[in-house]
Image (cartoon, rainbow over all chains, first blue to last red; front, side, top):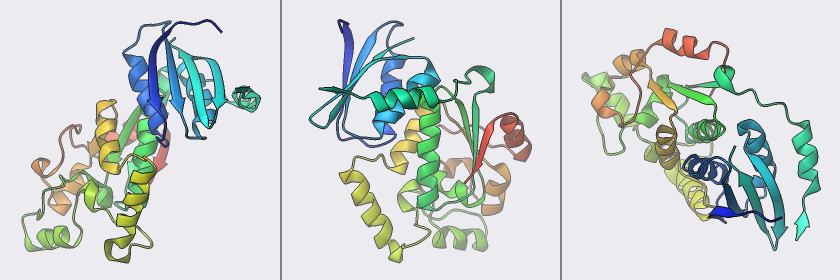
Length: 77
Length: 177
């Protein structure tokens, strides 16, 4: 997928609820339509990012896993 | 790299977002135990991150975590002073409801939390304030337990009573913890 990443958040190692809390904080400072890349290792963040995007209306463009690191691309609504 | 299809299934099973005026969470934080205060603050910060209007009403034992960590003896009469001596306030001094072992339990819990990068109650409380969670101390409990506004941390809402809490709770999801 060809998207421009406005910001990357390295949240590897952080446990619930910090990946979501820190992402929501960061996305507040971004413009609508911008994309944030989030890297996390908390397995709970996989269902949580889906739920959070559902609740907030932000778009989960992509989620992948590579060597224990989850990568989420979220477009701000 | 692998796509996670199970999550797509989860997404389709989630309810539609509520949003707007009706999306409210009110937590009645009654307990001062570490193992209840912690999830209270995790839920409050997460709800705020989800855009939910969130209020935490701190009452009875739940008020003590709001005491500044460096405040020791509070109260005006000997009973209130004795209470603060036996039940020290502040997020750094919370006890576990089980396996407390004279403070060894909470110390171990805090070490585990640090190792797993779980935010401490102190950090979560600060974050909750920054994220716009309404943190309301119960005025009646303050009077009863002898806690003044100066004994409590900054960033709290105006102390209020049950009516304010119940009005906030109208139409909201409510939790009593």
